[in-house]
Image 1 (cartoon, rainbow, N blue to C red):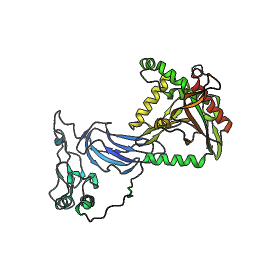
Image 2 (cartoon, one colour):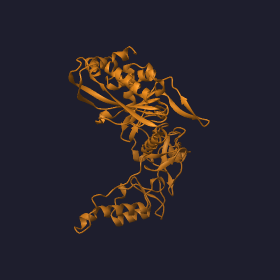
Image 3 (tube, rainbow, N blue to C red):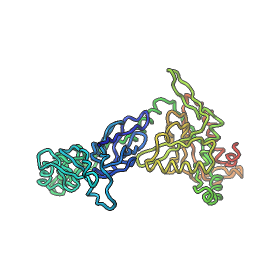
Image 4 (cartoon, helix red, strand yellow):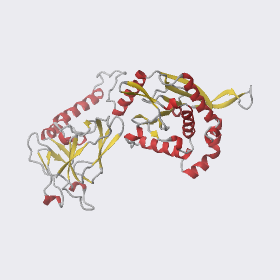
Length: 428
């Protein structure tokens, strides 16, 4: 019996997504809950599981298509059985008529589901190896010398149509035209290309504009001497990794320093929200810190929960896990919601100074930057100049909630924790 593959819910605010890829092909046997396709939403990459075991009968969408939550994107024949061990993949086929999949009969399903197509007739699909195309598309491909095996069909179930062949032929002719004639015009050197913005990139754009339009955003700067943290890391790095199985990075120190600052200045950890048309201040009892991670698809900010109760090892392990899952597209929606403060590190890309943008509805964000040796007054020899490893720090904040004096003192508190890490150990 046919079972529909439906795009599942991915959160209240997620209404649609873009198909990234099918992980299973038509005619392939699928186990229940096995991933059949991946859909990128504006928040996460969604893995769509098979609702039932069986053979994939049809795919009604292709990579690049926009699909709504709750839409049917394919059909599984749950009566078709798994192939015997060692059976050739080509033996697993589907019975179809006029391009519309139907379940296999119970007799044939027990051994192998057989794919049959109607005789040559205009408008009906037929097979050419693994290629499904209309007879007209095949004939046109032969006349225009187009390899039909390389085409992606736009018809139902990925069927190749005449228009697909003509489009491929036109693209091929256009690409080879300059080489065919020396007199052919050369395309302008400033020629531009366009591609659709991904859902995640669009969401990032919307949130950044929202932050600029709704918050009274200001940025305050300071600098910190990284000597003490660097010496501490150098001295204990190997022992720390042997005991905890994770490296001792700079982020653990900054998270601890930020927690100390948020405890001292709670409004930096608060948010402005609306309730019944009234602006309210929402104060948070926990320090749920979002850490910006750059991925091939854009910047994401997964949240490390309850940082005030985490050890250095737990912070480093948590950040490593979030960063790894972010780059692999494995973050869940819950991983990126309800942060109370954000840390972003432009220094890993060489940024010397920047003004980070708020991550709504949060009221503040800390920007870390690259470490540079600069001549400063030697803290151990007053009046003497020494080269010290220095980092510029920036805190952008919503002036509607946080006064400048509070933002400056918060940043000084972070600076103190980094320049004297013993304060972090003693929670001073």
